[in-house]
Length: 542
Image (cartoon, one colour):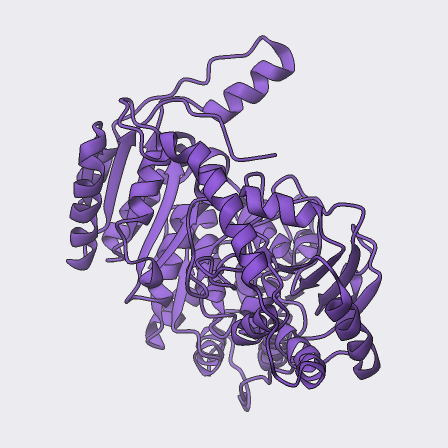
């Protein structure tokens, strides 16, 4: 068996049905011969974001895979890999490499060396017969421990060589649980807390620990908040939900977090970033994570449980249920306080959420979108800056894996790739990306990929002809700033690519346009709705 065919066969045995790619990489042809769907994108970063989303919305069970050319192709891919590393997403990255004689000659770009700091593992294939060993090590890292991207570099001169005595079986996936003695201590601390809060990270998604999380919150009447990566792990229409914490957040979340005496972090790293919430200094911290290096990294832990989020919650629940004799605590007082704070908060924002102004208020667009789609059967994501901060507090996620968020780093335009990857992994869902006119400038050409590859997503563009949030930051910093005005008719662009494009300028047309866009996606056509908005910069922060 030739090398390319051997690698493609391993991908199939590991459950990879789609290879996102950018030529030239000889693995692409081998994958196509093996009946693996190959999707060619217009730039490497979008392909990596697609692979990223495929892994996320399957809880890591289906590994997203991306292949690209040597040198510039690998260099262009670094942003997408860095985001997957920051958000602990398992993707397989397979760049072609320079020939083995040139791979370590300066200034040739060596992927296995240069990606080491933004991957869980990198390894070049040095000989044809080592392919099964290298790929086994790669998939073992992808399926075990803390998730993260893994890179396998394939030298250009390796293709065409023969693999002798090819043999490969799919890798195992393991889980580990917390220290039993510490579990009892943590359960007692949680039960004796007066104002506890549960903080949920993305690890709950990977462990599929949603039922256990809900059971614990209801047993002890504990309010639940999430990181952006953990959003949708707990139903946000639940009376105990506080929503997600980022740059923007709800009033109930802020109030309950800052009066908490215990914060129970589950499936999270407690990493302090510019896009997340900073933990207050007062409460005791219980840190439950799969990765020991997370402990005391940014937030000092008082108690810790190391292990899979589902196994950890199972263990804690066993202690709690015995002590409560299976009888949940009354959560009426807590729920009523949350509801009262939410009502007060929404009353403040309702003028923007229901505004009839023209240019449109972006909050009105997001509000109408959230109240028009079938949220339970929708996967939504957003881009950086204003779309993120305007969407996250007001989008109520009700089912697991219905929201793709990120908490550490991202590149403008990533939402388009996320939506396409989500649609590939969950074809029966309505998959939406919300972006701005700055983001579409980075990756808008890949809307053509959605059309060409028949990936019917709904793309919501908030076009204010200006990088509004950047303008505000620059103005505050210097009082002198360069123009951030930008322009374009992006609905026309979508139509030119063969998709559906519509520009909306009046508030009464928002919902009808959304309905038309959804209908187009149901007919297999990607749709881009361009809403002309004002330069809104206010976000829900306290």
